[in-house]
Image (cartoon, rainbow, N blue to C red; front, side):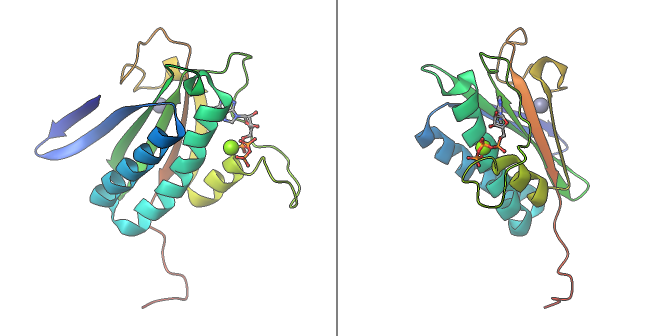
Amino acid sequence: MTRQALTAGMPTLLARTFAGTAIQARAARRWARTTVAGMAGPDTAGLAEAAIAELLANAVTHSRSGQPGGTVTVIITPGAGGVTVHVHDLGAAGGAVPRPRDAGDEAESGRGLRIVGELSDAWGTRPGAECCHADVGRQAAEPGRCTWFACHPRGHDGGRI
Ligand SMILES: Nc1ncnc2c1ncn2[C@@H]1O[C@H](COP(=O)(O)OP(=O)(O)OP(=O)(O)O)[C@@H](O)[C@H]1O
Ligand SMILES: [Mg+2]
Ligand SMILES: [Zn+2]
């Protein structure tokens, strides 16, 4: 499903719902990269794509989005020269929520949310019903989860071209 809200020709929100499979996660990542590039340029698109990849992997691995018939919705809004990206999943059966793990440097997992924190300016998570975009791409009554991040173009500190 694609939903666009248009104001004076500028998109204020772009959203798509994907099946919760690895193949669709790749499609979601590509769509998000193209969408963010159009809103905030290629540098931000690169950062956002890497962060989205982690959140999509989490949705498919840790929530009901990865079960047969499961879906995940990606919502992208422009603002202040950057973008805010939401990944809405279907919630975890056991009530687990995204929480950065205190993984050691050698750990092979538990890195995803720390990477999101490094790539973004801010991120957070809340029950899907509490998100202002709760009605996008899903039934508001579903007990899902919103994980979001905001990303702006990075300056080239000391690396001016
Ligand atoms: N969408 C989600 N729903 C429920 N729990 C989640 C979700 N995303 C993450 N979590 C929880 O937060 C923990 C930390 O997530 P994080 O992405 O940092 O590590 P990981 O997914 O376990 O490993 P890695 O990302 O390195 O493969 C997860 O182990 C899981 O318990
Ligand atoms: Mg992860
Ligand atoms: Zn949200």
